[in-house]
Length: 166
Image (cartoon, rainbow, N blue to C red; front, side):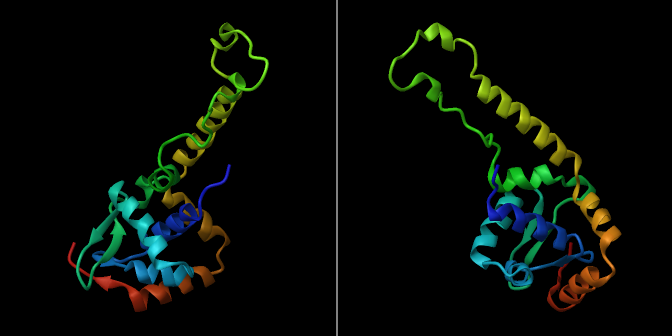
């Protein structure tokens, strides 16, 4: 299964926003700069995250984005679904019923076993993403960071974070 680049960008951006101080926001341009990605492409995903209730969008010249909920309340599945949508990754088009030498329709009364297997795998995948919160990701990162990653993020936020009222 392949997800679009927007999923990675969205997860990293949401993680970055979890480091903001109370009332702070980051612009889409700042998030794009930090991650070395296109602002217009990232903005599309930030808007989807806002629409899903994961981010708050603050309008105006000092506006930007911030988390709409606590990191422990945001799962990786929430982010993936906001960016990619809720449709299953595998979509059965019933090609088993096409082609030459057709067989009786009664042989297709049961759901496609390939589709069933793929949907079962997706349920497991989604369940795992649903169990993993943004807070969990932060905890895991802290166990491997020698301080360099945190310092990089803090230095960037020190320069780019905008203070607004909550």
